[in-house]
Length: 201
Image 1 (spheres, one colour):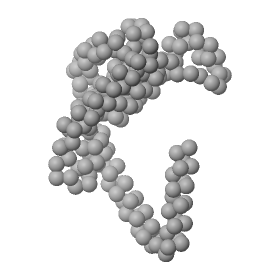
Image 2 (cartoon, helix red, strand yellow):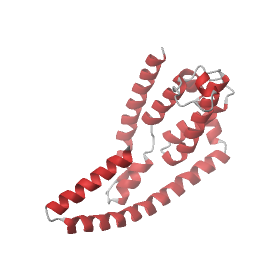
Image 3 (cartoon, one colour):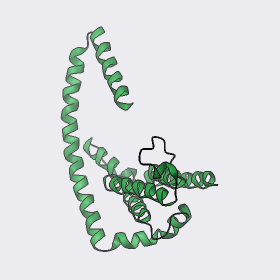
Image 4 (spheres, one colour):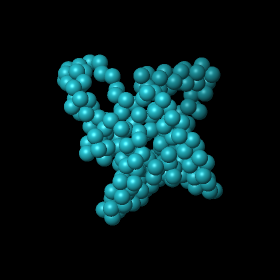
């Protein structure tokens, strides 16, 4: 669907530019944007390399494992029906920790693995739509919905993405958004927790 939306917007813009005699501006904007995209990718690659490296150091130093144990009570509260020794808990914990640290790139693989593990949990529970490999219609479990909502609303202590974007576009103080970001994501996470627990009932 997004492909159709973007294609429609591009086509509409080109048609409008052609009708108003502004095709040269469209061409220049496309070339300038392509250059900015490459520059932004280089900047983001550096940020990704830095934070992924720090994440790996934290993992080998045992910090991630300690953080995972630290959020155990929160996982028990949010996912009471997931067995404590199930692999899904480990993936969910890794995803939450990466999100809190602002490592959106690092949390994606863990998030995907968590969803796969939660699907396998539905098989273990005997959910017929997950036992049938060719099933076309599957309903997300409560755990899947809760995890998705938490992932979207996640608390972030360091908004790495936004800091990198602001730095790329010449902000005098890229990190000034840290406090507002913490406040906003803390509020969104609090509301997400209330919503999930209300719906879970």
